[in-house]
Length: 198
Image 1 (cartoon, helix red, strand yellow):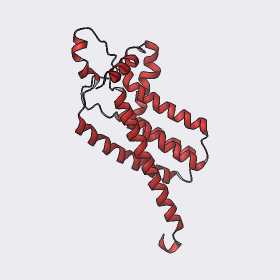
Image 2: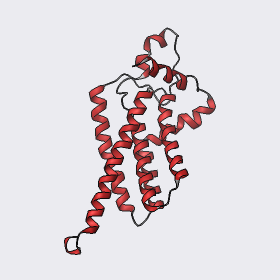
Image 3: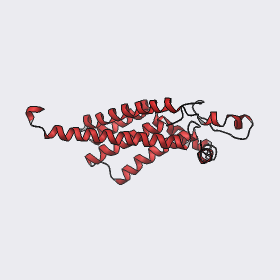
Image 4: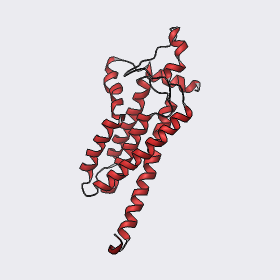
């Protein structure tokens, strides 16, 4: 864990802590839970393009599975300590305060699962929106802003360091891009086949 990682963590976690921020930063973390984020994304995919819903849903499902497997493999391999573990001595001595919301976590910090989920959903939604021409630039910015807020909330809640959320964002966005590309290529090849082969 680098000094810069620790400094950024404390600046966000302790520096931004307030009762007001608990509501819009802290509770934003729930959108990174798969059982909340994925149903919302499915409804949005349905609203974006009913005709291509099953294609888009396939991309979302594949991206979620691939990203989820990769996330857990990396978490178990790295087994990185979370902020409460890293700062344990300083917390006990009263030198550091860590704002914690939604339970104490100590290990498997890298990468952030909530960030991975948020950027997986954001990437698939933007890919689907672009193909259906239903999302403009500002819509894309808004979707990514929500994903960034979810990722930042993990620092605010005391669960992750900045490097963890960056790793989760790259993993989620990267794996989703690959999966969306694969689904798009598969559909293009499928549509180009003679009807006898379909």
